[in-house]
Length: 260
Image 1: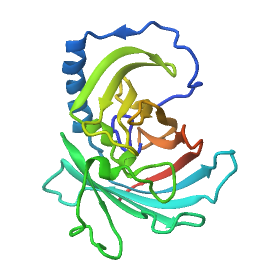
Image 2: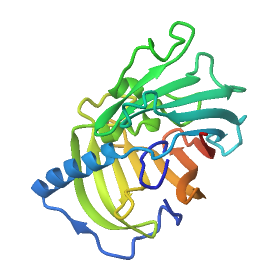
Image 3: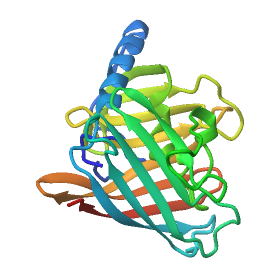
């Protein structure tokens, strides 16, 4: 949740603005080598502190009309003090007014530094974190609580894929960025097939990500909007995900509190 930690989720100007500085294009072999190296740096990131918090998800339909807002709570904690490189992110939607029946309301993301994350859904059949079945990959690409956020977005699933290519460097949203292209090893309809991410070179914070479907069409745009300084560190305060195909949009506003 800090600027040096990739989790649900730096810097605002219009997404359509032309970048002022020229791009530095990487050679094909260098793209793969440096892409994999950047992936490892991202996967090794972990939070310094444990957090509790709340979030409000503001949704708009294809015509821009506001939908009933969703409220959620979340936690980020280390379940075993003897394993400081492992942590859990837990998200629970509190109200689902206007949400679809059967929507995912309780999500668990298991993280371990240097390794891909895993997911679990808590429900009546599997109410416990310790016994809920875990999954990865395309199975994580389903909506959370009727919003434009997918389960995969909470764990940045696209950073887990093996095919990572650092294709360019350049300015984007007023930040000098590493431009990473992530490719799904098994793209199918209804999933992200490719994701292009702009990552701040200094902090490794996500500046923007564009996701494309299996036909190469733009599907989603991820944009961190604002950050808040808590105990000397910057944490994500608001994030927008826009679905370019359904024309819907969800903006999440977070309120973090360090655990005592």
